[in-house]
Image (cartoon, rainbow, N blue to C red; front, top):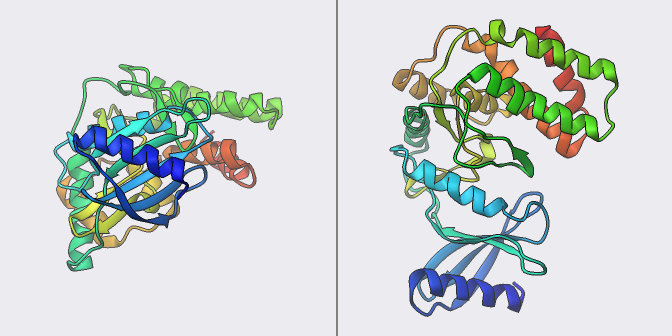
Length: 295
C-alpha cells in the first residue's frame, strides 16, 4: 500500500472513530474492474477498504447510501457498516471503509437457507414509489432513480431506454436495432402484466456480491433502488452461483407471483444491455436475442 494511501486511510478512520488509528498491516484483495481493495489490520481492529482513481467520482458515496438502506431494511443478512467514504477530488482517490467480515464457521447449507430468507426479508422492505433517494451506479453505469409511480414506465424509460440511448450514442447500433427496443417498450405493459410492490432491491445481486461469513451470509456492493423484486432474482439466475437451497428458502419465505419465470429474461435484459455498454462483445447479441424474443 502506498504511503499516501495509508496516511489517508488512517486519517479517515481516526476521524470516524474519534481516536488515533494506525495501520499495522494490509492484505490486497480483489477490487473489481476499477477499484483497489484491501483488508487492513489496525490498532482499532480490522477493516475493509476500497479506493480508486478512475470511474465516477462519487461512486462510493452512492454505494454507501445503498448499504445504509440495506442495513435499515430489517433483513437478517449481514450488511457492512460504512465507517467512512469520500468522493474523488482532483488527484485524491475516492475511498470507502467498512467493517471487515471474517470467513464462515457455520454449516454452509444453513448459510444457503439463511441467504434465501434474508433476500426475501430485504424484498419485504417496500416503498410507495419506484426509484431511490438519489441516482447511483450499477458497475460504472449511472442509474436514473427518479421516483416514479408507474413500474412499467420506470423499467421501460429509466432502465431499458436509458441504456439504449447511451449505447446508441456510442455509435454501436443501427437504426433497426434501436427500433427493436422501441417495439419492446410498446409491449411492456402486457409483458410485465402486473403491478409489483416497490421492493428494496440490492440492484446488482450476481453471485460475486454475496459472501458467507462468521456473521452469516452478507451482501456487498449494492446498487439499490425500489423495484419489482423479480429484478434481483433475474440477475441471480443470469450468471448462476446460487444453490437450490437458496431459491427454496426464498420461495418459502416470500412466494413468487404467477408469471415470474416468463418475466425473468425481460429483467435480465437490463443487465445484458449494461454489460454491453460497459464491455461490448457478445453481450449486445444476447440482449438483442432477448428483446426480439418478446417482440
